[in-house]
Length: 324
Image 1 (cartoon, helix red, strand yellow):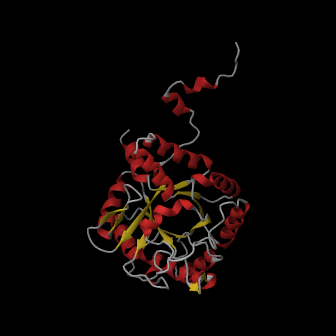
Image 2 (cartoon, one colour; image 1 turned 135 degrees about the horizontal axis):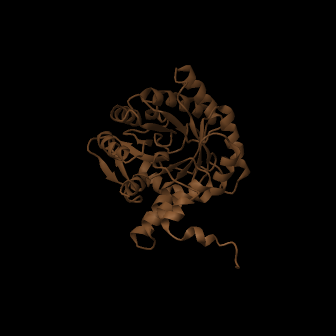
Image 3 (cartoon, one colour; image 1 turned 135 degrees about the vertical axis):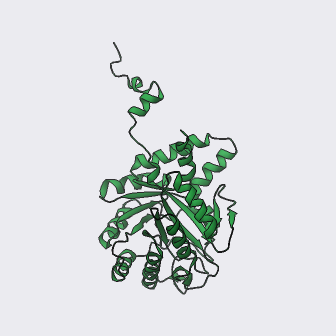
């Protein structure tokens, strides 16, 4: 009987759809980004990111203990220091805010994967991702500071360091510094294809790192370029990166797919602040089915090739699935 092929046969109910489902999201492959600042008892809401907060070390440690119990076991740390200067010195201060947070969370959750974002933009008084020479970021001076910071982060308990600065040659310099300091087993998870995106706006509120002048287009990638992403990826791999990140996620699913098809290392995609906030805002207005859209957005990222997803939705997603 015509038609012979009836794909709808396999869509009749949820149990059957689940049986033949091609793409699955695992909670233990979600990475939850968090913002930590000085003080005690701090849980400061970020107005442009509903449901996301700046935490002090004590409240963050308690929060992550609860999130860990839901099955999310990996956390990405961003710091808001009490003092900023032109050199970003609190990034590599052993008593810097991220280092203290790493130690605290590691003591409470020794099995958690603690990923230290490695960049200077949160720590410089000018908000750029490196050391300035005039109004230009000095690439080679910056990578020396990043290497120094990586060692301090590893010493504080970072499981993984994640350079997000997009300086040339930084992965090699960081790998050398880690190895020379006895941290040869600490992996590097590089933001290999990080685009100069308009989707980062809410993050700048959260991390308090808006550039004092200009923007970051001189070192982050041009959104129009696709082939260049593979050049950046292969350079990072040659320099010793163990894992790769594509950022942002949904506007760059083609890049994510290209990368995953071309490499044999784990690939993460970062569902960035703007992606999060757009979904949250529309959900709060009742314009979309928020939970369904969150699930669909994460599925699209996984389907495009991500082995891991960095997402602010991680606790919510884990909570829904723990209740099922």
